[in-house]
Image (cartoon, rainbow, N blue to C red; front, side, top):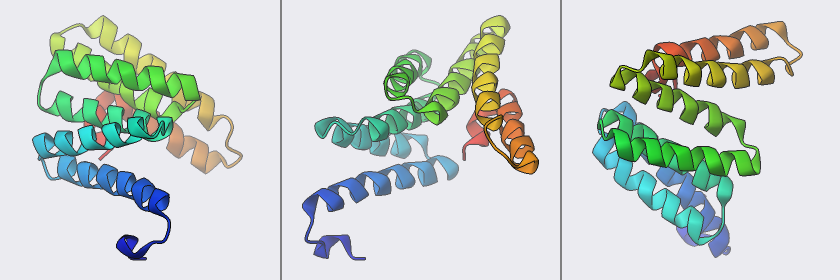
Length: 159
């Protein structure tokens, strides 16, 4: 579908935010966090302009990841906190556990192993809670494995 030919401007706008998110993730995977950050900021602005809280939460988490990769720790901590607040308000667990894991990475980089472990444990517990809801034991195991990988390398886990 060519978005420029759509009869529904709202759908074009909505899809454009998903495209921005994907572009930012690609840039992070390519090792271009500055570019990813600029795109994630645009995604968050677009989401806030239309009260799309799920997209806002997801964009804030991505923005926080880019800031962590840029080692802009204070900014990353604030943005990740905002992501968690929005995600908690709308009950969007994936953003919560990803942002918690990134805050754990920030604590690890500051040398605060206790705080890092607390954040990682909270993120892993959220993943475990969701894994228990799955009927398939193989999927449960794979999901829990993702929770374990959060503690090893939260940045790489979500590339």
